[in-house]
Image (cartoon, rainbow, N blue to C red; front, side, top):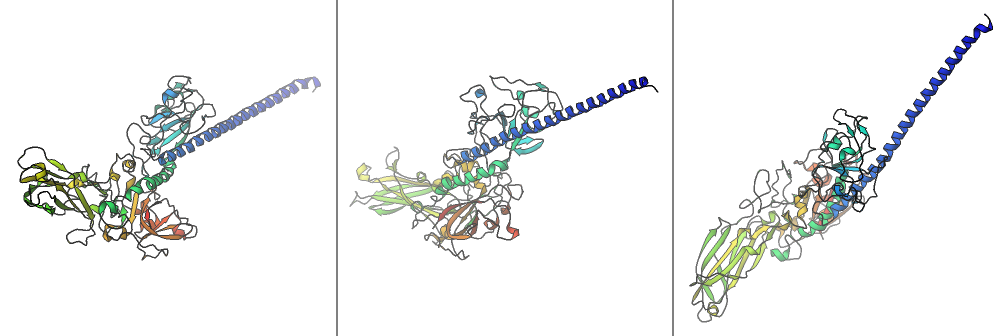
Length: 593
């Protein structure tokens, strides 16, 4: 073969080698491009995650701080999204709307949360979704440790209380599955349209997703769950209970009001623990004589309708009622006498009224005459009661006149009963009231005059702690926190030990101590000087569905064993493995020596 004949073959080989090199270079460029794209995607997601987490922590802190505010009537509420009208207003941008229709979708209220304006890797402000039941929509909320987030995310119901979303850059989303086609635009004024920022179900605002087809979805979504926000809420609520509920609870049965000696308050009997509700709850919250631990006796006797769905409504005669028919009025001092009287029931059996004539002694007609009436009411200390002195009245008028009755200011005494007085049951209360009648001669009424004296069963009324509209303590009722509070009182601080009130201080921690004892770990010190305690049950740690009737699903360890030793903030590194378990009870001391 000649050299000339080899040249074409060498040319072909050279072309083939160039092709191989070109192919390799193309592969390298594509591989590097894919690698760079993947790295860029990772960088974008990391940048977004940082902004989303900052927003989440600020939201959690905001809710806890707002809950602790004594003036907050909806503790635990999340802020609404940015008001739509603030979108293009530099002075109000990032400010939460006062109310919103839930679930609410809008931009993150960064200014309200105390943040700088947070943006994602595309330079877009973050968006925000709030669950039903978790933001103010014009009526008061019910938020407590049992309240779930109601957002459906990735087809899972009740999986979040809020979402924070990095919307990513505008793009032409293609239709894919449940995702609608949308060529997004980002106007700089007007009311923002969520579909220009969010995709798929997120733009619709009823159910939400964290992933979607790449051709139609570029949101990066971070959940905020009930488990994220409830611990901070519980800490703030425990603080508010200590500041706002405990001081009032100490005054419910104060000696100055209820007529027993000493300076120490009495505490009501506890309601035995049962399913606290609502919904399937079975507890009627009725205190039981000699019951010292359980639920707060948060029963109602007024302003409610008894039903299977409201077992704590115990109107007359279910709980507080007449121990017996009140006796007729008596003249207790003065210079005259009751000449005639008759007594009858008014308004069913709610009001006892006695009317009659009184007469002055002729030889000293200027001297006063006082009449009194006495009534005993059952089961007063089995709940939180108050005295309404407007519900007993004394009146008089000329017996020959059809004119109006003259109202006389009554004075009274009231006393809780410890069961030792004959005929007066433990926990009952006796009211004695009356007034000085007008001098007949001074009024020119002749020889005789008429009197009328009456007492209403509702003179033993519900305490203001039960009032959901009370501006200071109503949140405790409306948000059902009372259903998550365990209550304990030393025996000697209840009506069972009147008039001797209090307990014996001890540092020994012995079971014979008649005070409640509180252990604070890790010091292991036992303070045996507690007269009454409240324990706020945290979120369930057992995974059980609440409400239920199992006390161990509410409070942990020694706090649920019926003893007098309670625990606060335990650290269990030194105890046996069986006790190394989660603990989230919060103890509030009501009273101590």
